[in-house]
Length: 212
Image 1 (tube, helix red, strand yellow):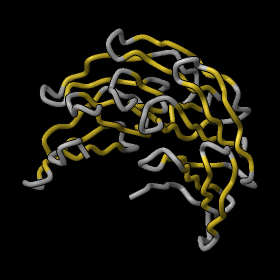
Image 2 (cartoon, rainbow, N blue to C red; image 1 turned 90 degrees about the horizontal axis):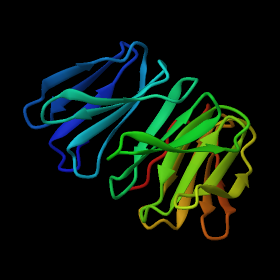
Image 3 (cartoon, rainbow, N blue to C red; image 1 turned 180 degrees about the vertical axis):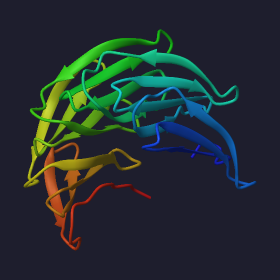
């Protein structure tokens, strides 16, 4: 959803992104430029821009009001799996099958850093609410915490028994939630970088997590 709740963005294996009016229940636009399935979409905090990523290895920025492409960000060498804006809207984080996480400047539309450490596909990225930390999840069964300012790894969280598909910060930045192919959801203390509990009621892999 856009920050004001008026627009819904969806992405599809049909290579398109669609914008919808929430109140009118109608399609506003179809954004076409990606050449393979679109894996993730995110609104900027001010709601003016949209970021999308695709298996075509690109990340794209779009104007929501004009419904046009603003930029194509290239650098990843594999499918781009997840995209997220920093809370201040100045940075974009992306994850990829190429085992890297990349930080991008929105204003300059350029790559700022390549974060290397994961040993397999990186599935998801999440900024902390204060924008100081980035959490990433991977098929290598680890979650990693990174300093956004220093662009360095701060810690590695282990516990999942197979690929991790999703990671998310709690609204106050105190906790992380992760979900994995091992059918579990795990809660972590960010400050202690330790596992707090394992939730085990799912009967198949967990694909997404979200805090209220």
